[in-house]
Amino acid sequence: MRRPMYLLLSVLVLASLILSACAPSTGAPAAPADGGATTTEGGPVVEEGQAATVVTAGELLPPIVAQPCEGEACFCKDKTVSVIVNTAGEKGPISGPFYEVRDEFEAATGAKLEVVEVPFAEHFPKLMTDMTTGTGQDDTSIAGAWWLGDLVGGDYIIPYDEYYNDTTGKYPKWEIEDVQSGPQDLLSYDGKKYMVANDHDGQVMYYRRDLLEDPAHQAAFKEKYGYDLKVPDTWQEFRDVAEYFDGKDLNGDGTPDDGLTMHLKVGGQGMFHFMSFAAPFVIGPDNPKLFWFDPETMAPLMDSPGHQKAMETLVDLIQFGPEAMMGWSLGEAWDHFLRGEAALTFTWGDLGALAQQEGSAVRGKTGSAPMPGTTEYYDVTAGEWKTVDGVNKVGNTTGGSWSGVISKFSDAPECTYYLLALMATKEKSIVYAYRGWDGVDPGRISHYLPPNGTNSIDGYVAAGWDAKDAEEYTNAYFGNFGAEQQFPYLRIPGTFEYWTALDIHLSEAATGQKTPEEALKATVDDFNQITDRLGRDLQDEIYKKSLDLQ
Image (cartoon, rainbow, N blue to C red; front, side, top):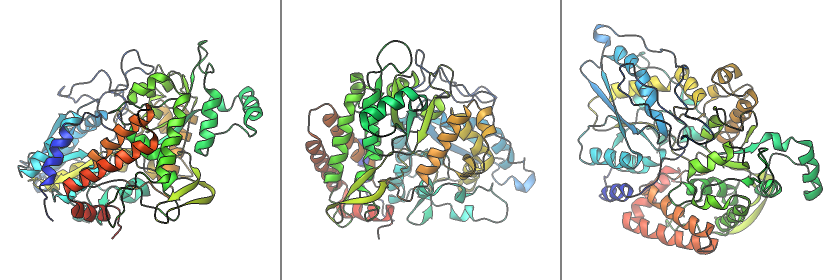
């Protein structure tokens, strides 16, 4: 496959972007036995003075899966596997489990494991520099799923189908079928497996269950809106609930609180939330995949009437949140909910885990559900609005879904796959999903409770979860990732540049500097400039492959 020169330019552009990793995690990594890892004093969300205290590694550890090797079975003897991960605290301590597994991996293979932690803003540029020069310093990266456009497009990583299908027992066995269909799709590209499952990012709605179940609120809500107070099923119902609770004292401290919390600061990841929010306004039964570009011309679709309606609806909701959230990043918005000062929000799985921690005002009160939908959507292929029976809902895999890839230039690809497969085993993944501090969000059948999955509530309760919170949380993610319609995840070169342009113009609409229509037209202009610079024909080729539109 060709290695276009634009990839190096993309690296330089990305290096200049200041944006925290999507779906940051909730605490500190486990320190290795030899003391080589540094335990942070909390990630970007959990800091002193916030509603949830620092989440430490605790005593819940994954079981040993691999047994020590002997003689020729130590097939990685004299090899070193180097894994590059985001610095602890920036999606955060995904590095922690690598320190936990190091002794087990080394004993089972004869290899040495080197964990390289770098700030998020340096991770992709460092990785790409290593690959474009063919140095092979990094055997594997715990990469963001959107990087695959660059990594596969440049022929910089290898598929692992051969290792996964091995029947000799050489590698730890994990089941890709255990991963739900939504996040499972991100593990492959153009029909080949490239990412070994680890994290499973997606966004759901969180609500104050105690408020929605309060008889006084139920009576007052029905009198005002003419229907029963319930978990919002559509964005219109979400608006009604936000409006109703806005200005009421929601945590008993005698001061008015807010109907919702969001974060709208440029560089604060607001564009990810717009994607999940906007999905049902554009994606529907007759248009399952086209949200970003026309696959025939790479003309951006971002200013369609559906996108405009979504942005208008989102901007309208701002009035039910605190004025300060216009300058908030993700952690500040989460903390507002954790203090009991907002009735609604929608975001990643980390918030569900944070709600269980010491200092949270909403443990045992946090309900979860798939994102609301719409009763109609704008079909960009037909150029018209279409009404649906019931509610048009769209699942999402919004976020990084940080998982392992194998460098083409690694001198130990088999050993590297062994490491990633070991950490992907069911026995370890279940514990990672329980804990909350290690950055791994649920997305597998083995993570869910019956009848959706094979897990049990005992594990969540033992890890500190409120049983009802855990039940709704896992059900929400099962519903989200298993939805028949899934938001089309963008995986082409320059993805982060496109998303950054959307982020900037979303903020302009939110702050009134531009109308939603003007903001989206400006987004289209920026998208076209990026596409032309990177090569329209090549971008179109990779776009079609990424969404199986060929």
